[in-house]
Image (cartoon, rainbow, N blue to C red):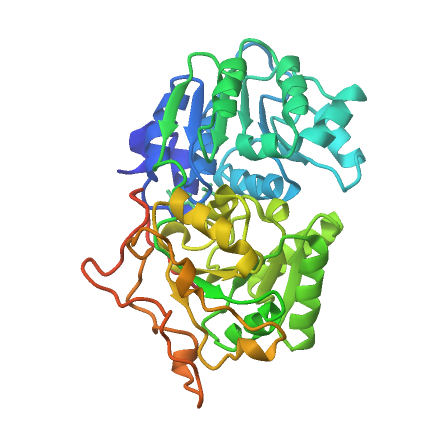
Amino acid sequence: MPFEALGLDPKIAKAVREAGYTEPTPIQTKAIPLVLRGHDVIGIAQTGTGKTAAFVLPILQRLSTRGSSTNRRVMRALVIAPTRELVVQIEENVRKYARHLHLRIATVYGGVGERPQIQALRAGTEIIIATPGRLIDLMDQGHVDFSGLEVAVLDEADRMLDMGFLPAMRRIVKALPKQRQTMMFSATLSKEIETLTNEFLSNAEVVQIGRRANPAELVTQFVYETTKEAKLALLLHLLRDATLDSVLVFSRTKHGADKIARKLSSSGINTATLHSNRSQSQRIAALKAFKAGTVRVLVATDIAARGIDVEGISHVVNYDFPPQPEDYVHRIGRTGRAKAIGDAISFVTPDDRGNLRDLEHFISRGIPRKVAEGFDASAYKAAAPTMTSWRPSRPSRPAAVRPQRPNTYASSRPQSGSRPASGSRPPAGGNGRAAINSTPRFADRSRRRP
Ligand code: AMP
């Protein structure tokens, strides 16, 4: 179905085609007509589903027509997102889709100077994309005029709640005109999100894509059983495989991320970090370099990497296993996006056993264990335990087994004395790829960068 069929203006549909999209994603097909009809919408969808365009395109359509009551330039659309990185990413998308329209777009987030943001607000920029903290600061200083606002979006509302932004969200929404269209997006539909929907939206239509807690489709997941002491060496060992060409590594702490990055860099691997101790310009530079392919490994913490969209991430490595299953789902959603294929690798130490079990329960699947051939974990202090004793109690289908790539990293470089690959990825059988997500995906794109 072409984008025009959703009722979008030819100028917007043209920009979307130029962005390389051939047809709308499921969330776009469902949400865009509703938003164009003026409904409030609560969208339950992960990043990677095309949700940004699902709210941006109909907003552009509304804004490409003249303001209803006045000719003066005013803020007409506000998008709130939890992190600076996400704000910048949304802005990039808005600019891409609005390239044939004459609209002013600006961002508001902390860590950079206020002056240009104040100027943009005072000039009545039509679309503002903001983090809650800086927006509140500028509201308190009297620089924000919401009187002409027509539409508001709360993106990644679940994460904003996790980050303690509820009071800020309430203050912002309270300051908006009552007569407005509101959209809220969240990866999951929790009780808290339902409460917020009732508070911020009216007669909202629910658009839900995929089941709750669906890890991204097409992502092959597996676990390396290891010890804390052996993790760095294991990562270096895996990175000897050139197919890990664009790797997002998740560390639990900023300090840990720096340590990993130092080690990789000193081993000659181009590495950057993304966490909140880095300055805004460093974070933007790191992301840019990673997107451009000049940096092979990006080591990030959860909050910094949330919602990040980098085309062609080949692998996500959970260097530190996430305690919350939801975080796992978000992390692995960074790869395997838009029909790309990717691997999600998790390092699991004995301390992570309980969390792994919880996760397997959460996604209703077992994740295959794998042994890195040629890697001797016992050389790193405490030996890796044999994990046979803590396989998931319920035998379950392997997650997203993908037949088309070589079976293991190390198997392509056989080494003498390697351990048997008893925990390696199970052979593909039956339908070949046991998709773990029933969500339909969309337009074909290469997993490699252009
Ligand atoms: P999002 O879920 O908004 O983070 O989008 C994930 C990725 O999908 C981004 O790289 C978008 O550029 C891309 N995308 C969005 N809509 C489409 C579409 N209709 N066809 C192909 N790619 C899309």
